[in-house]
Image 1 (cartoon, rainbow, N blue to C red):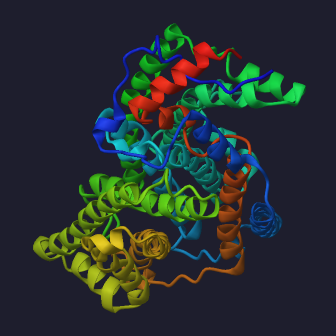
Image 2: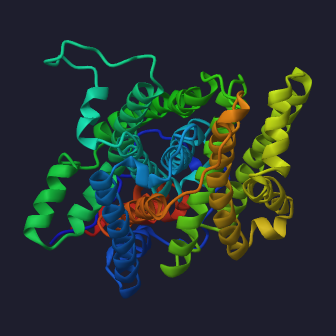
Length: 472
């Protein structure tokens, strides 16, 4: 008879005691409860099927818009000189930012032994992978001729030419491919013990065999745990610089250009902080409905929400400081074009986008100074939606006003997104949520093995006695 995989607690290697880091789950009684409740999220439901159909409908809208753009040409995207970057690059930077919170929660907070990450990091890691998969589409969409995208890749080719390494488009190829590779590896390594748990509980022979292959024959031995802990620590340390480097590279797309409002050294830390902020917003957008629908409140506790809200508040203040520093630099520089650019951003042609950005990213998050609101899931969910909107408009405010009001007045222009732009934007959300919804029905959205680490010691001993004394 197949049994659920449980850690061999008598020979378990020394691993960090996460419970001492501040996370307590008093409502968790034993290992069987952990397996039962988290694995219950894998059963398809009507609500899940409805959301999947909605996501696929949005994806179909985006695919139809892209096909029409390929047929009619990039002109249907609403671009007109000098604004040749629009919704596509805005959304590219937005999705890259969304992907950064996963690495922050799973890697950096792991290195610092932050206990509140335990029950939300799997959701964040999956979000990272699918967000980077989404972001990677937009440079391909933006070039207009997607079948030529492989010219961006440096490989021996029949033209005997290398890509233009001075092009930000080539930098983005390296950034995305590196980040996606490490994120997928990190996610998969962390899943190994949980895949073994699913394998032992699976009744279908074919699916059991597939899970056995994916788990690499995991048997929960001391030696396996030792190698697992070392590999996970190495990947966490290796992934940490990516949080800083990848979005810094994306910021160089702008700061290397001689465009008003772009050519500044603050962009690298500014983009990194904004990426973490927007990623935390998306984590709340995803985990709060999952927590409520599957009744996982005793895993994703109010203490976890409170700690995540504090991190969101901190990154919001960093981003707000960067906004103010941008205005100060423009004033202090004495360059009239820079000053006019920021004045136009707030009170000119694009005032509505700037004030949406400032309200959603600076003003509303100040509510998190209240502990009552930090521990209110409904408010955190609503705030996360505003953060997602505000961070998309932040990228809009950076890109469009700068290109539409450069140094030569006769080039000044406007920009109006078309239905094709908006259709592809909607499609990107459909693509992201389709993959995420498929993921949560195949693999645990909360890490089973790590949750078991914080089961109270008396219950660990009870589970160990039962496993060794009762037989299987």
